[in-house]
Length: 154
Image (cartoon, rainbow, N blue to C red; front, side, top):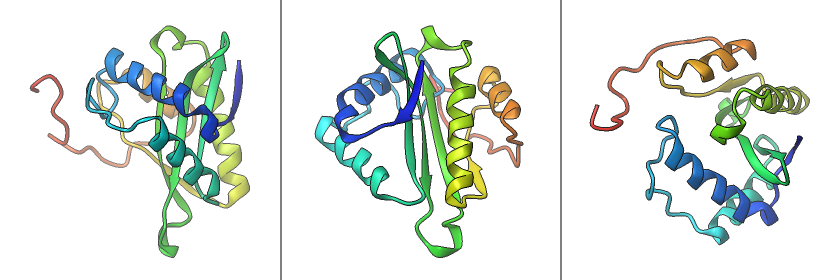
C-alpha cells in the first residue's frame, strides 16, 4: 500500500472512488447521484490543492488502484491559515487494514511541516469505526451538532 499526494492526473481515479463511497456508505456528505463534478473539475480541484501551501489531498493505493483518501483544506484568511478542514474516505473492502491510520499519520507529518496547528473534521456520532480512528490519531470531540444532517429521512 502506498500513500502519496494526489495530482490532477489522478482525477478519474479519485472521482471513481468518491462515487463508490457515495454509494456504499451513509457516512459521506453526498448521496448517490449528488456528486456533480466531472473529471475536468476534479482535476482542477486537485491542482488547486497542489498550488495551496496549506491544503493537500493524499491518496492510498492498494492492489493497483486508489482505495482511500484524506483531504485537508486550509483556511484562506490570515486568522485561520493555521487550520484545515478534513474529509476522509476508504473503500469498504479496505477498511480495518490500517489505511486510515497511515493516511492520518502522513497528514499529520505534512501539517506539522507546514505550520498547521489545528485539523478539524465532522463525523456522525454513530460512525464508531471512524470515531475510533480519529481518537487513535489524537482527535477529540469539541461539540455535538444536533439535527445537522438528514440521512435516509432521519
